[in-house]
Image (cartoon, rainbow, N blue to C red; front, side, top):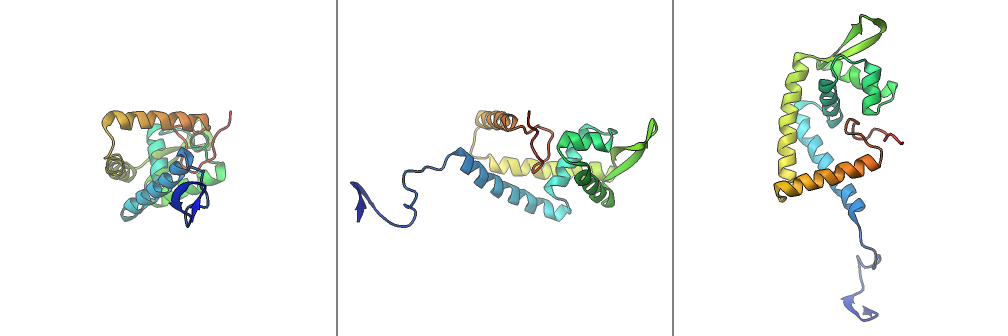
Length: 169
């Protein structure tokens, strides 16, 4: 049986005829797949993507107060304390009292944290290379620019961790 002149038979997959999934749906599908793959690749190192994100941001903001870094990456104070505790327990991060304000702590990578960050960056580079292997260099650059623009329009900063709440203007 056909639908109004369409030669394709009615059946499974046709119930949403006329609706084409667009880029938002594809981004969700791809994001879920890529996040899962990255998580699997980090597992042997005993680290999660959120830990990698925090180590990366910390390397760029070493010595800043825990609260300031939490605001920068979009975590509330409770989430930030838990994340820093996890990294400190793994020997990757240390809190140091701020000599100017004893109530505040600056965050620093340990030597083990720097080593882990280097190892995870290598995994991330390999993962990104495999993901973008079907694109040319200019296509990868264009895709990155477009995704950055979409992220900024949604209130996501380049510093925020995946899963953190976007900052609305």
